[in-house]
Length: 326
Ligand code: TXA
Ligand code: MG
Image 1: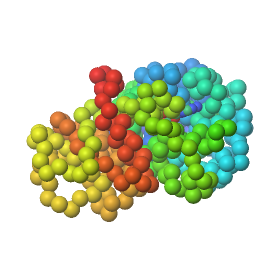
Image 2: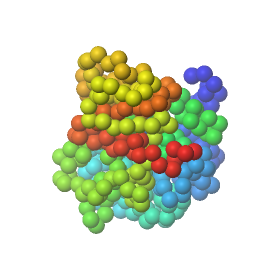
Image 3: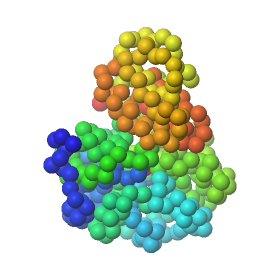
């Protein structure tokens, strides 16, 4: 793990740093989170500073068990119970009315808070030991690629974090699915690690926002430009037979043909599994981004299952907005 070694801590140390108001990068099954005590507004403010994240982008609160819900949300309707029983711990965030103890900074002034129980035993142990809810966005600078290894966290945030808990590579590899539950029913705010098909099989039709790519986001993960590599990225429907630059990289689900036109190729799953592709997705993008390429060509995924969340991330990576100029 090279230079990041001296930031790596034990579960006990991670818990006490959180209690003292520090920042700890925590592994989850989706991506690494940059955690702080959600009840301590100064600790939470340090998250925004470390990520250079705008204050209008609210944070997800992480808890170890369902018994914690009354400490976070004021309502937990029947449909939330159904979803929680089926998908927690796991890559699902529920947005529900918050209790007053959750600082406005966590929710960017919204009356609702996003909450989830991550499916990572080390982090759940830290959450139990710390005995505080932990606000944690993905542990990357705002708008950049999400980290799925401790090394990614160190490369992107370095000493802006007080500690890193190394839990190995993230199993799911793509952020949680976010559902808002209110009087309008259940609305998908962000596609993610649990597919829409699985959710609808359990609770019936879910509302889809008109466009999940928006400039004035309900969930700022919906900002048009997000999850972006530094290298320009272009989405295509099929692998092109010729490319403009000899320094072009390819990101593709699977392939069995000869491809000499690319300087670097990332195949996400030899068998075409979207689950495996999600697990490899950000790591592959990090490697392509580090390869000094002129352009990354990404082949669109099938629009089903986790392919939907992967296409969503690709679209935001392609949309080169203000964050690219930094
Ligand atoms: O898998 C995940 O969800 C990871 C891990 C660390 O848990 N976290 C994550 O956090 O992806 P972040 O901050 O990178 O993205 C969370 C998204 C943001 O786009 C935010 O706007 C949305 O969740 N969100 C959080 N609280 C919200 C709320 N009260 N209302 C609407 N959207 C909310
Ligand atoms: Mg993020």
